Image 1 (cartoon, rainbow, N blue to C red):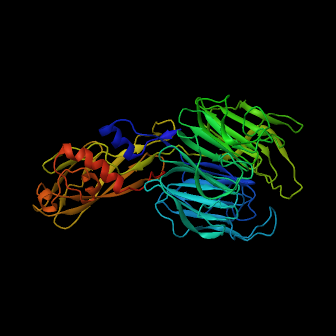
Image 2 (cartoon, rainbow, N blue to C red):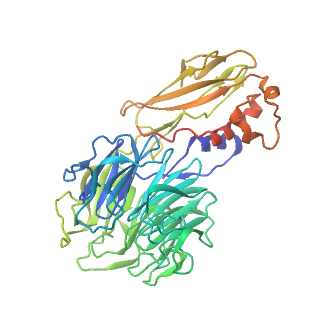
Length: 525
């Protein structure tokens, strides 16, 4: 389950192979609730005591009025955060940094509030009571929330409600109970926070208040953080595990814990991983699901009526291939390729069937996967106003939109794409640039620079139209002398000045420009 961004496509055209990115989270399980993205809105079930399911948590499913354009969700212990297409992050749930207990007196935020200080975000994660947000274009990772074990990575043990920059060069991340993990752009892994069971993979059990490089891992693709254990998915489809293994949640065939990332030898061809409090999950290359670890509440779906644990991954049989999997504290949620949602495990708060159970004495369990009264539409396309094919001859520029589709790579309906432009004064720009004939004409006074704002609107005939905008500075052939630059080694770094000379130079410079001038991230329809 991977997708390509516009920079990746351009890099492949000009320079060869580029790395793939992991999919964002359309489905997420928290302490006692789960949430999923449905056509840009959030649906969920389970505990809504703290507002984490919005103002009407008992609806089946619960919805959150006014929160639209959502691309990703992350469920914490008693909270939910959402990422919108515009790069903003929104919060619902337990609203203070004071420790409260499940089913206790809430200090709830049931109507979403924007997290101040964050913009341009395109990935989020939620731990027990702390949160992470990533700007892929800059590699900057921000953290906020509880910090008693150093899980924010800022070198202190002080809680904060304000997102703090803690790490750069990050590609993806995960948040557990009091600790955090990050995959770096060079495919190494950093970890920080609570390490009482060796979940940081640093060959000891000492907490770390700052990000620390995990030794011996150089080809990581994704990470998953559980209650007291961690999983690392490698680029070759194998999995490493470290931390508490009392219930077999590491999948090593034993119940012995380890503080060193160790191969789960029975797994291969894995495309996604998830970690609950004491259990783990994975999706294979043919969309089959694996679960292992504690099964006392049925979270591994084995059907056992007495408490058991699985020390090795078990294969589950469901009605359709699995597209997404999320592990809550003691339950597991699956989204199938037909959009239906299934679940197994603890149903203490109706998180698997919408019932109104609530209370510390509840113990209802669902021992094998069954349908959940939620259907998700996360197959909508994405759009970037990127440049995938460019020719330069005189003043003619050919623009082609890049449309990144759902997991199976096929559009759900024919796409209508339209470029429009708003030129600066003194620039004549032909606005009738369709995908069928995307040549646009630019004319302007010699020696002068001017900007053109391009907007790409896309509609698939099913979902609302979405659009993305980019700005191009237009120069003529005299700009090289005017700027006084040559094609030196550092020339791409200066391409924010957008001096277009000829096509050979432009292939190199266009890639550098996209790196230095990120566009809006993929927009859900």
